[in-house]
Each structure stands twice: as structure tokens, then as C-alpha cells.
Image (cartoon, rainbow, N blue to C red):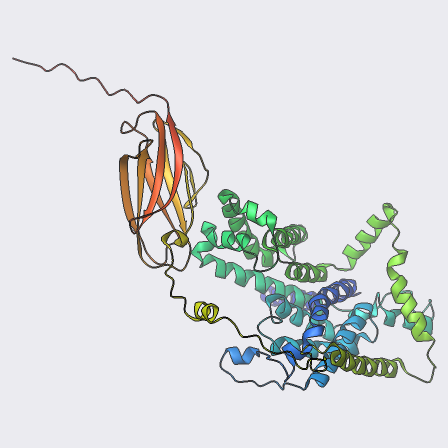
Length: 506
């Protein structure tokens, strides 16, 4: 009897988790914010539709990168531009909630198609996550609240009939939440198997690069090794525990709060703009009815005016309501989509990205200099030894295999640590590190092999009685060539040697 009750309770809890009915306010927020963010890069690519997505350009399909051919059709420029315009129109309609289900039914497949068609630049991690969330929004009732559809329904049925917000099963929101749990847990498992993540090198190289956008704050923070190591461990712990905290009453705010902070830091330190906003938009699916009620009370208590937020929806709904009553709103939507398609094809024609209709004819390809071409294909210039090394510093504290501080003054009894980071990829190397006095005489020297999978090497020296107070140089050499040197000063007094006891003689 206990087993039956337990089984019934377990399945009842699972059923309530997925099929409890609530008003889809969280999904409505995802619909508005996620679609707005995803629109930004897609609108910016519109002038390049002919290059990226049409048979007139050079699209690189995702399947082609995996040796599976080119399964997707590559349309002529006019048709590609028309469909691209329809996709943008459908996504804008999704933001405002005009014929929401139809907008996502048309916009989501087109968004997937254009992303799969250009795997070099358009298909990214954030577009993959956005595609999954768009699919869930397509299957949900996210347009039933805070939308033009809801306003039109209220005007049609009357305020009394729409006083109670509509309620639907919450499973679409749950699927978006589960998506984030799997993404974070999988990312943590990948990081655990990546040694360079826990030593800070991977994050450091990313912060110092401008692969995404400029990130001057990241370039400064990259030099703080303890901070990188601490953030790395916190990130892995947070990603592993996220699935276990996301649905707990208290743990949910901690997991989502750390997640928002994490993604904002990737914006500041790594130059990522769209990806963190996509993820934070997905967090809105965790907001349930009680959360929206609490937020509304808090906003009203602060007397923050929110009536203007709905003005664009009401203004557009008023214009839609001015149509002839014999024309259904779905027909109006299709008519506007056709108009946008024609305008998009005309815009592509007038942009004339290849200069076909210019006075001088089509743009000619410029011939590249032969020396530059040779350098790009196979650079015969050997790599300098110093270019194989990223940094060389000295200190006296290690954190997670990395130098935890940088110093240039030491006392007798200190352990001096010389630490070098090596740029990947590199061959098996023999690296020397020597201590020179102010006159250039070598006081001490040591060396070690650095195999091709290693990204750093450490050399330890005891500031004992080999040295006297004064100025010295720590010199790094590779293949007999000096790579870098760092000055340091030794202060204090040498430790006194223990006195010898008198010999016992006969």
C-alpha cells in the first residue's frame, strides 16, 4: 500500500510539474526579449543576404562542414531576400504578439534555414539556443497575454469576459528550463575534462583577444591569475548545481542570480554581446504566476509608471482594428508579409552589393600581392623563439599551478618562482632559466623539458646563501636564445651558518 501511494505521489508530482495550469507571463517575456535580441544580428545581415544566403554568393552550409553535402536549397537572390524579409517581419510580429502562433510557425523555420545556410558566421551557440526556444514558443500560448492578440480579444469579448487571465499547462516553459539545465551541466562536464580551463590559460587567451568585440576590462583582469582560477571553479560548481537548484524555492534565486552575473561578466570581459542577452532572456521562463504578482506589487509600491510600456501594442492594435471587418486579421498578416517580401526583394536589388548596375560595371576582384598570398598559404619565415612564449614573471606564491603574485623584491629564505606561459601550439622544447647578477655573471641555472601539451613551466630557487644582497636578473632562454628577463632585488642578511663544535682530540 505504501509503494502504491508513493508511486501515485511521484507521478502526481511529475504531472503537476509539467501540466499545472498558469498564465504564461514568463513565456510572454521570453517572447518579447528573446526575439528582440535575436533580431539584432539578423537585421544587421540583411544588406548581405545576396552574399551569405543566396546562390549568387558563397553560403557554407552546416552539413557541408561535416561532409554531408549541401541538402538545403540555395535560392536566387530575389527569393532569398524576400524570405529573409518575411522572417524579420514574422519575428517583429512575435515581439508585439500579432498573430503570434502564425508568426512563430513561419519565422522559426526561416530562422533555422538561414542559420543552417551560413555556418561560418550566422550559426553560433546563441542561435542554436534561440532556435530551441523559438520552437517552444511556437508550441506555447505565449501570445495570450501582453500582446496585440490579447488586446484585440479583450476588445472583442469585452472587459468582463477577459478579466481573468487565460491559463495553460506550463510544459513549454519547463522544456526551456530543462534546456538550460542540460546546457550548463554539459558545459561543466566539458570544462572538467579541460585542464587549461582550471589553470586559467584558456580564459586568459580569450580575454586578451578581440575575437568577439573589444573588451578592455578583460585585458586588465586577464593578468590577475587568482581571480581567473577562482572564477573558473565557481563557474563549474554553479553549472553542475544549476539543475538541482533551479526549481527549489530558495535555490532558484541563487542559481539565476549567479547566472545573470556570470553572463554579464562574459559581456564585460570577453566581448560577448548577443549570447549573454539570449541566455538572460531564457531565464525569464523561470518566472511563474506568483513571481509576476510579487514583481507587480513591488513596482506599484515604488510608484514606477508602467502604463507606457503597453503603448506600442495598443497603438498597433488600434491601427489593426481600423481594417474592414470583412478582412480577418490572419489575411491582413499574410498581406503585410507579402508586401514585406516584395519590398525586401526590391531593397536587395537597389543595394546592389556587387555593383552590377553601377557606372563601371560589376566590382572587380583585386589581385592580392604574391608575397602576401605566399605568407597566407605557407609562411617560410620561421617563428622566433620569443614568439612561442606568452609571458614570463617572477613571484613567490602558486595558485592552482599558476603564479599567484608578481614581485621584484625578495628576502633571504624566500622561494623565488619563475613562471613562463607558452603559446599553443608548440613543439617539445627545452627551456632554461638562469639567475644573473648585476655584472651579467650566471649565479645559478636550471632547465626542463616542456612537452607539446604543456602550456606553462615553473622554476624554483631558494634565496639562500648562494646570493648576497643586491640586484639580479632572472633570464629565460629557449634553444639557447634569450627570450625574456625580469629584474629582482634581494634584501636582508644571509642566514648565519651553524657554529662548528670543537673537535674532541686525544
